[in-house]
Amino acid sequence: MQVSVETLNDLERRVTVQVPAEQVAKEIQDRLVSLSRRAKVDGFRPGKTPLNVIKRMYGDQVRYEAISDLMEQSLREALVQEKLNPLGGPRLEPKTLEEGQDLEYCAIFEVMPDFKPSGFENIKVERPQAEVTDQDVDQMIETLRQQRTLWNSVDRTARVGDRVRFDFEGTIDGQSFPGGQGENAEIVLGKGTMLKDFEDRLIDSIAGAETGFDLTFPDDYQAKEVAGKVAHFQIKLHSVEEAHLPEVDEAFAASFDVKDGGVTALRQLLRDNMERELREGIKSAIKRQALQGLLDANPIPLPRALINIEIEQLARQLRLPDGAEDERTQQLKAYLFEAEASRRVALGLLISELATTQQIKVDDLRVRSHLDTIASTYEQPAEVMRWYQQTPQAMDSIRALVLEEQVVEWLLEQAQVTDKTSTFAEIMTPDRTSAANRVEQESAE
Image (cartoon, rainbow, N blue to C red):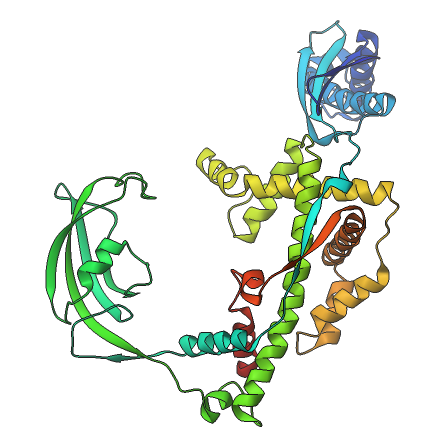
């Protein structure tokens, strides 16, 4: 068997394998002989069918099976011989399959990139310094009030801050267009849910009013088919509602299952949640900077096979179809997930290599601590722990997370880390309402 390897690019290899014609012929002949001993052919006793009859009846099938198995076996031997480890299934391209000639084919595949991470000392990380202030708690209370807004119908014209319900129908040159119609649509004026010019036309209108107006879509409007065009809208306003926020009093605190201590206890509960989330937010901000610095310092070629696997995993999280779908679905997946999938693959390769070169081993105590933290958020922690321990894929995810944290800690020891004064709001954006949501969830349980 002859084997040659060609480097197509940083990651792609073409392996050409040539199997001698004598070996191919012997494999086919051995299979025909074996089949003749088992085949039941009309007019012949079992095992007595002449070989030329077997060949005439089953020759093509036997040849196909023999060549397929020879390709699989010879490729496996060639990869071991050349010390190659393909990522994903190789793409096979037969070159010669003529009877009496050598079997020659090519296998094209990707391999893992060969790289050595570096540049850690140039990574710059700003460590946020912040605390939860009384003003932060005030803002969180205001967020809770807004989440429990009561809407009351009013008999007056609509103004900014009101919630309105309406029907609308839009046309361009007399023709309807996608997204141009709606019934019982609800928006809060001034929130920017719809185009400002559209919302402005609803201000000063009263329930029951019907009106029409022209509106020009911005040139950079997200729906390209209507961008820059003039549309005519007909509107029927059904209701105007005014917001009423609950008072911050004993009843308000009790609505969050704060049984004792009233508003003071509610504020303390919020502060505790916010301080816990601030610690996690600071930790996440530091980790994000360290990993981004690692990526920036180490641009590496990424195997397409690994990116495709990651795209499919991300798509499954959004319940998009699996496997080989139509071309438009594949394009949509690439558009939605290509960047994030590439980032995950790059980080995975870099973290794995750093863990190997720096001999960083997964800390089992940390794994246990992560499991305890996760399980503690459920009503039956022991069952959750048992499920994780009996689900290898779930445990692998926990171990990968712990290893990533350990690598980040190693990176921070090498990087340039400076403190930066910050605030709760800056660190938690865009997740400022998470502490409020947690209080809502706790009160509902």
